[in-house]
Image (tube, rainbow, N blue to C red; front, top):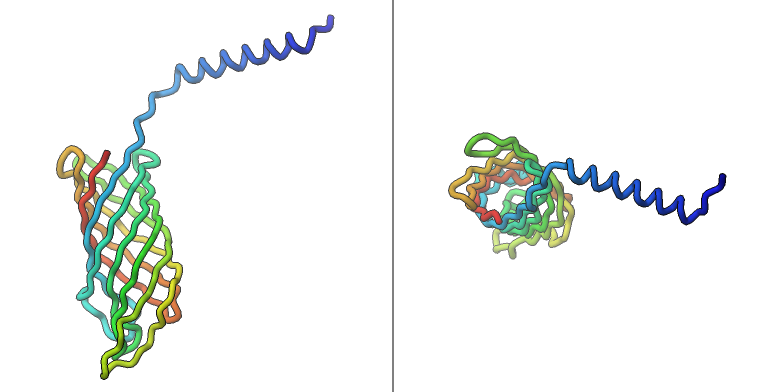
Length: 190
């Protein structure tokens, strides 16, 4: 016997609705989304500069906003500024402004988390004005870059963390630079 189309649709809708409610009732409760904001400082050294190693004599600062995608995975939007030696010996130092997006994966221990991060961004490279004894080498330019490294997060208090990181960045500038950075910062989770 033939059933009307409206009746079949209602039955399918009721069955799929009951199935959805049953699945939702057995699912584990999800945690609220966690965010963090923070700031810190860093020491930098250009690993491939022919001007000689700066022995981490250059520095900078950064600020970030972070969103945890899962308990051990986070996405971070970072802005910062740091200094590098010029590409050639006798060339002026550079100021690099960064806007980057990274993903981190952390392994949890009792009182700290440790892991790695990677991502990319846009970087503005601006050389200082040369002195009478310096020859300009690096042009002023906006470039893309890749970054990655290791990260440790130490819980200081309920919502405050100490963040220690070490990493390398590749800047696709006219004269390529690969800054090695050591950084530390504080963050607030909410």
